Length: 297
Image 1 (cartoon, rainbow, N blue to C red):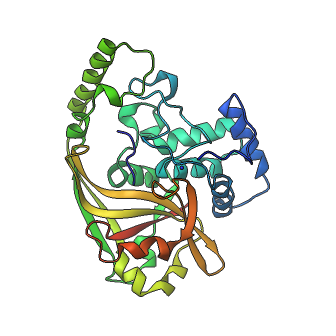
Image 2 (image 1 turned 180 degrees about the vertical axis):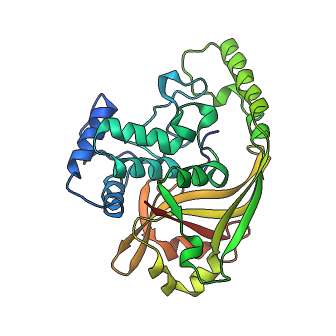
């Protein structure tokens, strides 16, 4: 399942490499003196500011992908999740090989590269798997006052989501129309490997945050945030409900708390805005109810 969360290409600060591994190595060299995960997150996330939003999900399983042969990693375009993943992997890496392994570990269950093991569903897979593998720590209840945190719940119907897969969604070049139909049916048949599961995720309500803006000083630099829509009904679009619609990074600039993220709206770029400015339109919103916080380890 492509990431659905809701970056006019600017390469002025980038050298152009034929091999993404060379680009990864160059980016890592530029920030090799930066120490500490949160400071490295700030440096690497700044590297990609103004780059374009990648509609449809810019990453896949590479040339070995059965259903999605988009590259395993790239540095010219992002959606909200691949932006966070790329920054996290760079922040933990010492060289290009190390970076590629961190990307696999963050994007796939047990680091096994396959469409069916990709962490497609934030509250069911991406968040718990990256807590389990040590990249992240849920701090939502640690930073919020007692009694403020709420819990979002949804049944993630993975089998039904596979039944929504059609030939036009395949990212596999070179197939004939007939071959694409056969491959799409194979894709839909992957539904038999899964069952629907309940997913939960804690959140601090938007309305409470906006009434207690000074509390945001408790959010650590480099925190990963998830925008929570409890039991978000997407059954007509992708066949299931979800709990999370967007991801980003908290960057502290003095007392200012910024959200740095790949935005699918407006100019559709990687941007940063004050978190309160991002949240303000969602006061009393029908579906987006709160924010979930993950410390980077």
